[in-house]
Amino acid sequence: MAKKQFKAESKKLMELMINSIYTNKDIFLREIISNASDAIDKLHYKSLTDRKIKIDTDDFASKVDIDKDSRTITISDNGIGMSKEELENNLGTIAKSGSSAFKEENDKKENIDIIGQFGVGFYSAFMVASKVSVTSKAYGSDEAYLWESEGIEGYNIKSCDKEEYGTSVTLTLKDDSDDFEYSKYLEDYTIQGLIKKYSDYITYPIKMETVHVHDEKEVKEEEVINSLVPLWKRNKSEITKEEYDTFYSDKFFDYEKPLKVLHFNMEGVIGFNALLYIPSHAPFDYYSKEYEKGLQLYSNGVLIMEKCADLLPDYFSFVKGVVDSPDLSLNISRETLQQDRVLVKIAKAIESKIKKELETMLEKDRETYEKFFDAFGLQLKAGVCANYGMDKDKLSDLLLFKSSFEDKYVTLKEYVSRMKDDQDIIYYACAESESKARMLPQTENALSKGYEVLYLTEYGDEFVVQTLMEYDSKKFANVSSSETDLDSKEDKEELDKINKENKDMFEAMKKAIDVKEVRFTRSLKNHPVCLSSEGMITSSMEKVMNAMPTGQNVKASMVMEINENHAIASKLKDLYKKDKKKLEKYSKILYAQARLIEGLPVENPTELSNLVCEELS
Image 1 (cartoon, rainbow, N blue to C red):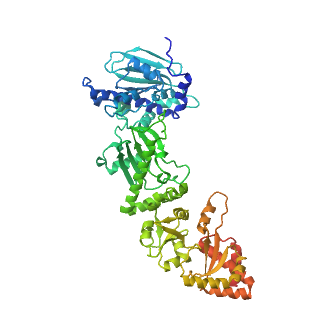
Image 2: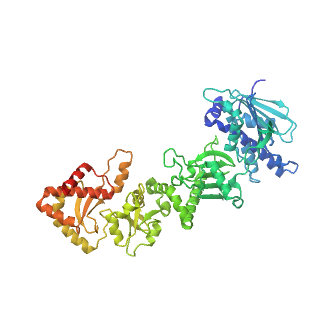
Image 3: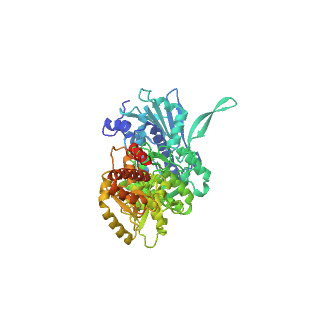
């Protein structure tokens, strides 16, 4: 009997279905099982709308059988089945979807979940099968038909014997090749693994015969492989903390309990269920380029994407979880999503929910939030700086900084609430640790005047505050910046006069060291010297930028400030009058001291050592 040709325009389209649209061979089982579920759904719906149909819905199921000898996998269901005409239309016409047509006919009457949309999933079977046979008997019919095809050459349909209604799809696997081992699909554990991965939450049972040993004898038993009802579709009040934690551990391979669980659903024009987790720690590769963000994405319980990155902004990339929506607009392969308004709206709702949960945690469970921030605060800070600060206002209230106030974490809101009435600046100090930031001469000066100081000790913290620019109309200022002036107007005027009188001495000192300016200051209390920065690039930013693998050598514009009230000031004036050569040596020693205080490397430690020894001998 001559084979019938597919009704698609050309063999090239069939080749596209088999070889190009699907990138992962494993999903063939997902597609066939999804079709089986659709067939059961159709019959279930018919039984609800047609009183003549008397069916025990508890018997609905699909079954997977493996025959290693014949190299076949058979997926069968007791769904609505297909007539000869339906086999012709649904399988003989590429991209003709019976599920889609059924949904269009019945959605107006009552909402119904049907997985299939495009009618091409069935053809994924040809990625792994050299021959596909479909035996089907429509519910209420006495006739059954066999549809067979070996791929692009066409197909045959003929009458056959089948006792029960429903459909069986038998795949004869291709022979193994150097490129791919098709025989792996004949192993029970492989098929069960694919069911658990892609079809674990199909509405109806998926059964397989499994072998168990009883009294030293192997016994075959039929088992339900899938979980049926996903945790995220159950009522929250019925789920225990242990169940949430176990699901997280099993799904995301983390054996530490999560900090928080977010379980919610959205209804309306766009609906979805979500079960999200905020981990208690960052995975080992979190801050590396190998880390992939994303939530597991399901459509009606069928896994579509293992990691859908579009559902999370980068600054919330630490969140793990699942999202399930019947409203997704999938592309033809069902593997990826079209970038449409549905996905965008789901992502915005998820972002809002995560942000609100973090704000609530910060307000009501500070200890837990601080643990979270220790693990993922760097990611929030990166989010502030990303995209030219576009999202800084979303994240500013989630940031924590160590502070001179009781030496603990504070928010910017808390800092501002404690500011003096006449204070309009948020002061901060940059150093490698809190203790070093606290010991900076400039920090000591700010604290002595009653100002709270934020300690920026993390990599890139100063970039964060410079991106924020201000908070609650209060600007940020580095205590080590030459532009930060805490002196009174009278002190400044008097100091300006003294600096002008010693201008020539400062010029002589500048020739010996690499600074933009040398001057006296009265803000150092008991400290003899310090470095302050001029311009946008500070000493802390210099360290960060030079640590990057760009090959750049960035230098901050530095000012060496000498305590005008310290004995060293009189010594320098005396040397300028009597021994300018020695003044040069003192300048180098003071400059090296200032760099060490600032946490910067000494450019010539050998020279420094020799100069100090000369003065000590």
